[in-house]
Image (tube, rainbow, N blue to C red; front, side):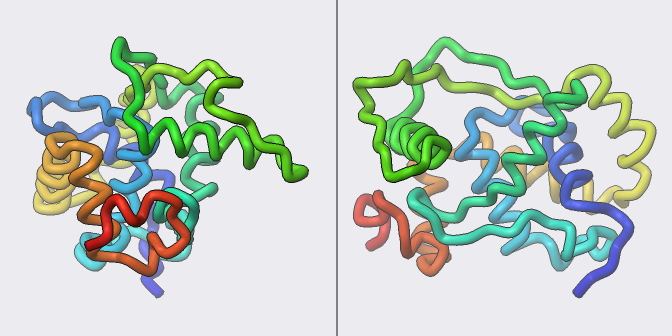
Length: 194
C-alpha cells in the first residue's frame, strides 16, 4: 500500500480545481454519477502515477445498484459542502434516466426498513454541478497544488477534460464493460454490458 501524504479528500478537491475541457480552473463536474465514476476510474487507472496519495485514504468502491459506488465519497462531498469548500449548483436541465434511477434508489436506501419510493412520489431534482467555492479554491492553491508535480496536474487536467466531454452513457458503458465485477449488482447493467 502506498503511504503518500495526500488523502483521498485532497484528490477530490484537486480534481474539482484543475481545468478540464474549457481550460478554466474549477470547471464544474456535472452530476453525482459522473463525479463518482471519475474518482472510481482515477483509482483504477491513474493512481499508480500518484505515489504522493495515500491509497488507504481513498474512498472504497463496491458493486452497487448503479455500478461502482462509494458512500465515503458522498460523505466527503457532503463534508466539504458543510465547511463551504464545495458548491452544488442546480442546472436547468433534467437528470438522465440512470441518474433518476440512482436518485430514487438513494432515497429508498435512506428510508430503509424495506419501504420503496416510486418515481411518481418524489420531485426529481434537476442536474447539479459540483465546483469549489472561493474558500475551496484558496485551500487548494495554498495547501495542495504544490504537492503535485507538473506532469501529475497535467494528467489530472486531461483526465477531467475527457470525463467532462463524454456523455454519461459513454462513461457508464466504459465502466461497466471494462470493470464488469464493479457492475455485477447493477440494476441497469443489461443496458450497458455487451
